[in-house]
Image (cartoon, rainbow, N blue to C red):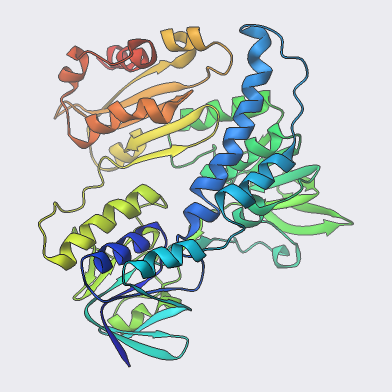
Length: 451
């Protein structure tokens, strides 16, 4: 048995940050991962997907030039350029040698393999047992969740990994799932000439956000030629020659390729948390305000159920680092958790939706503004779809949620994220001077509607 101060299972963004920082601080750290060091974000998530989105948005903007300031001639998409950038610039052809070396240069020890907890302070990696004197950090992230649809196991399909790695695009694609990943990739591929259909079981797209957002996004997709089916439960999947066929109560959907984007799942059983007396069939690890799972065990990132967001993992990582080093740090506070879906227009949101606030027993008042009717929308013109919606706790006079769906909506969200997180009084928001008022005036319009 080899002994370390800390063992980190899972070296995605949060786990890598914990492991590297603790090694920098002089602790002996063992980092374990069966995949690539850096995790989902640099290889399939944040970085390569945003390269795809940037390329697709550039195409869309070029096509809008005739209505704004000139004539660019024909715009011809070329996926080869995108695929090459992803391989050579973003992922180093999915080689994590640089990341491994970076961790080892800090003094850490890396073992590539599948780690599982086998007892308090003990971790097994492919048959070899290691011990941790100070603690174990669980940061294994999530995997694509594949729904139990009849026949799906016999149909070849993409997850986000295969979609990101694609060298060539199909002529047609059906996207199963209208959440953030499904919507982002659907729009990217459609802008590169793929005939796309999105099939979503919920009543509207991006079901975790306000219904108005899903409805507005569906309208944008329709204008771009993307077919959207909501409230559609797939009964079975199959093949007809070289085509994938999905059957719903309302008929069939056929395409050359299927992308399954129906959420993410954790594998607590594989992580061995039953050895800690925890329910290994739960949907996430239970953590307290210090991200502690139990004595000597911490959780970081997607596995804690606080959202599949890199910024959450890094936020939690800082708390865990402070806790293990005995430093002061505020406890976790997720009421101002921001999230962005990088469609065009972007969908930025923070805190609760209106329904979530009502379900929590909050007396709610809402205010909204349609972006095309704001100064920003009028100036932006083509591609100006969206809305701003504010959710106020009327008893306390503060915002508990906000949405900014607009061009660069994620950037506009910054002011609203501070307002929700710091519980800034709504009255103060009405009287403040906004930076770059042309772009932020929609917030003021929504505040007036609120009041």
